[in-house]
Length: 401
Ligand code: AMP
Ligand code: MG
Image (cartoon, protein in one colour):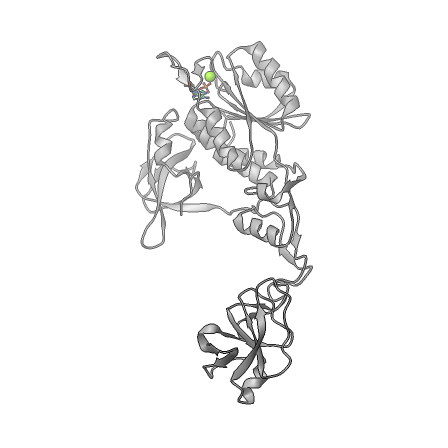
């Protein structure tokens, strides 16, 4: 049995790059950018007017000119009309390109217009006002987005603005989620009192969907030959195999033996933790990574967030989030020589502190408890008395602020 820290190190040492692929930019939400994106032209591409009003030459005001003949109107998207004298102006709309012959824009609110003549009503005018200068935000060829960023709505917006119809994003590993157990039935089946509906594959699938991974699912009976056959197929067809169940000491826990018979290198089996002690981890010579989690729903859920998700984020080269911590809200006693991942509810108090309130359920089979929790708090192995007010690391699985 190894420590959580050692298991973490082994899992993270297996992070790898699955390459990159071009994807239509509208379909990249939640993917990770694998290329730098450049401005294809200056941003803004012209001296862009930011209000509706009139464009004039500032020098005219210095010469006490405050009435201007309207030479024309420029809408957004129009080629600009030039003015030829200090006594002229053009009406101009938000988003329109300023003519080269004008340098200042006065908003309609500060102008009176009558019979084709505009009179500026105020004195306080700055040269260049109400203009967003060409290239002020970015120059042509500047980097507008650096790679290794999670694509969000602002990135989609930027891609659209610079004409990137396709984005190079990190490829996602092909994942299969395998549930094991003769007691499991499908969601739509009425279970006997001795059966349970299989939930783990749905849970894992839902969590991976948040990373845009559309995992396949498979169910295996507790039967050694079928287990070998199906695992063999999966080792050839997937980059990642997530198993739940069948890795403990039970008479029908065939998974570790099947994996080793198929040439999967066991990197560890059993971690000094609760829940999730029987966690099994290995790699196949052809490259597949195998996360075999104990079947208890809370164990699977904890191992998924503590090991698989950090591994996945490292594979996708997402910038490390840094550790997150919270303050334990009340005393907890946990004597076993295991690192305890206690379920907690998180709240920010009026001192801007993140407070973790333990929500202790009925052990690793108590999945209902998870719906009320926001995170696991990782309580150190060496201690047994965890005092209210102490700060410990958390592994959030819900949005917390
Ligand atoms: P195992 O790790 O196979 O010994 O399973 C431990 C416990 O988790 C048993 O009570 C199983 O019924 C339960 N379990 C295993 N797999 C699943 C699953 N996919 N969905 C819900 N419960 C499961
Ligand atoms: Mg089982």
